[in-house]
Each structure stands twice: as structure tokens, then as C-alpha cells.
Length: 441
Ligand code: NDP
Image (cartoon, rainbow, N blue to C red; front, top):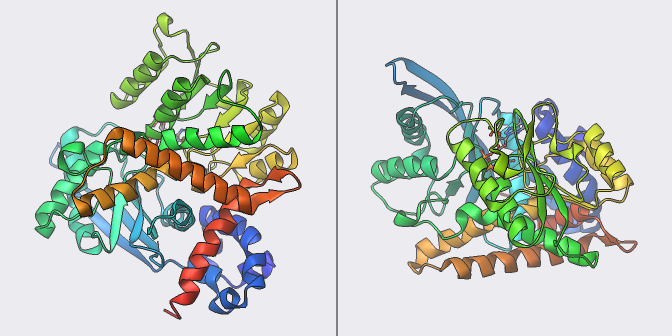
């Protein structure tokens, strides 16, 4: 069934490996549901979701500190607004391509559907490398990007947020440019600073939400976080906030990592150690000389998955965890994997874990906390009533627990939960109903 479906998808997509991988994984799970519902099959829901509503491509021209003209490419993939305005992050990374953004926008449609909020799916970004760039250069790049993008976003149209290398600083510059270009204060971006309309807890939301989801997975196994040895990859927004919350809840976080290697603390990182990691990243510095007081060592040649964790949380980037690494985890007795990053496992790594019966929560469910709090930011901006950090945290926990219940309900089979299947089906049902009921558009 999946092969027949894929054979009808436009040839360009097959040459986009990340998008193809995401589409194939979803198709396998949801085509039986589409086939079983004639209204979904007639509407050709999955085929329509496989083709973004539009892909906008921008040339971004800006001046560097030396006065030289720099040219980058940027895109915004608006995948589907069937259940709400387009919503999804912006990524700055030299490896960004249309393929990357198409896969992320496709996944975002499913993730946003799982949150229960009225949010469509999109993703954007640029092949801009912020490494070594000054603050002024980052600002000029953000302003140049917004000059191109401003007319295609807006609170009822498309609401970008951050992603890799796009944090509060970049959102600030983007929002400043949007405000000037649009003569409006409308909430066209989320992840804003607290002094100009941001939500409490938006920065922490993805990482905290991931840990709340993991707590639900552990509860299914009759366990808690206390004493679990947790390996986390990455050292960015998602990774470090997940680490902080895991430590708060009694977990032993044994690793964080960067593109250069892994910081390993056999007795667990402290909150101070996590702050030290955040400071190194903010300064653009490596973690290769940790103070002895941190009780951690740096391993340039190792990944976090080599340190025999009970729980593995990939929080860096797509396809970072390969089959060999998944083998290592299975042999070490790892009990669960939950994805802070989007599609961090290669297909064969995911298949291996499934064969070994190791539960794995896909990013579209486990990292949905970030977009969920972005949804809360939009409604706070619309109503002018702002929630306290405690209120947002409670709402986040509630949303993650609800996502877990929906996913578990759809994915439960033979006494186990297939989280990928459950997430795909729960999200598909919502999207399919909305698409089929709105006619052929
Ligand atoms: P950040 O830019 O804050 O951090 C990214 C981290 O990943 C960095 O530590 C970086 O290493 C590392 N990294 C990037 N590429 C690679 C690579 N090829 N190999 C190893 N490490 C790598 O990004 P976020 O934390 O925001 O995002 C991380 C993941 O989470 C992404 O997949 C993103 O799509 C996903 N996500 C983010 C959300 C958010 O709210 N921010 C929401 C939902 C999902 P280095 O320090 O060396 O650069």
C-alpha cells in the first residue's frame, strides 16, 4: 500500500531524502486508516498533505562588518493551514535546504494537530551560518530576511518561531523588523522576549515538555524518573532545558553534547554544570575543558549513546542516531527513547528499536511542548491577558499528558504502546477530518 502511494508522489520529492523518509514513515502508519474511511480516501488526504500549500524562496542580501555584500538563500514552506494559521520555526544553518524544511513542515502539521490547538504546519530557514558572525551581522541578516518574508506572515496567516540557531535574540531582531515594515504590533512571531509580548516559559517549553512526556512513558512502565541515567545529545535550547527539568525531577543526566563531542558525567550533571554548558554555547566556545568541580569529562570521539543510559533523549538534529548507535543502546539495556529533536533517528535505527521492543516517542509528540506554548503565546497576545510562569507550566504539563493519552490510545497493541503509530494516527485523524470537511481546495 505504501509503495503504491509513494509511486504517485511527484518525482522531485523522491530526491529529497529527509522529506521522503518522513513521508514514508507516516504513510506506513496512516494509509490503512485512510483506506478504511471512504471520505478520507476520496479526499486523498495524505497525498494533499505531501504537497505543501506553497514554498516561498527568498534571496537575502546583507552587508557584513567588513562592508562586503553577502547573499544567502532562505525559504518558508507553508505546508497546510487546514486546522489553523501556518505555524513552525525558522532554522539558520549552512545545511538547510528545501528538503530539510519540507520534511520539518510536514512533521509540524502532525505535531501541531496533536497539541489540540488551532495551528497549521510550516517551517522556514536560511542557509546562513551564524558561527563567527558578530551581533551586528546577525541583526542585519535577520532584518534582511524579514524584508523578504514580512508580507507572507501575520497572526492569521503564518506565525514563525525559533529553531536551531534562532533563539530569543534572533526573534527580537526579526520582530523589530516586522513591526517597522508592517506598521503593526500584531503577533506574527512567537518566542518573543517577555518585555514585548512573549510568554513565560516559551524558552523552556520544549525541553520541559519532553521530560513531562517521558514521565508519562515511565508511568506506563510503573516507574519514575528518580535515579534513571539519562543521556541527552545537543547542548542547545531543547537539550539543556530537558536536562534541567530531568535533574529537578530526580533524574541523573549523564551527557550533553555538541558537534565536537560529548560531555560525560558518570554521577550526573548538576544544574551548575548545565549552566556552564549554556554559557559555553552562548559564547561560541567548546566544552573540552570542563572545570574539575563539575565532575565531567569531554570525549571528542564519542556520542552520548556510548555511555549505557537507561533513557536516551536525542535533542540535536535529524538523523543523528544511526542503526549502530541504536544497537549500542539496545545492548546496554536502554529502556526508552524520546525525541527532543525532529526525526533524530535514521529509519533503520527506529526499526531496530521497534524490533527490540524499546518504546520510542517521536518528536511530533514528545517535543510538541514548544509549539504548544507558542500557541498559548498567540492567545495571550490576542487577549492581552498574560499567564504566570506557574500557569504556563501547568498548562504545558496538562497538554503533554493529554498528547500522551491520545497517542497511547491509538498506539496500544499487544500490551505495548507503539508511540510512532499512535502519534501518526491521532494527528492524521484530526487533519483528515478538517481537510475532508472543507472540500476540494
Ligand atoms: P539549538 O540551536 O539551540 O541547539 C542545537 C544543538 O544541536 C547544538 O548544541 C548543536 O551543536 C547541536 N547540533 C546541531 N547540528 C548537529 C549535528 N549535525 N551533530 C551534532 N550536534 C548538532 O537548537 P534547538 O535546541 O532549538 O533545536 C534542537 C532540535 O530540537 C532540532 O531538531 C529542532 O528542530 C528541535 N526542536 C526545537 C524546538 C524549539 O522550541 N527550539 C521545538 C521542537 C523541536 P553546536 O553547539 O556544536 O552547534
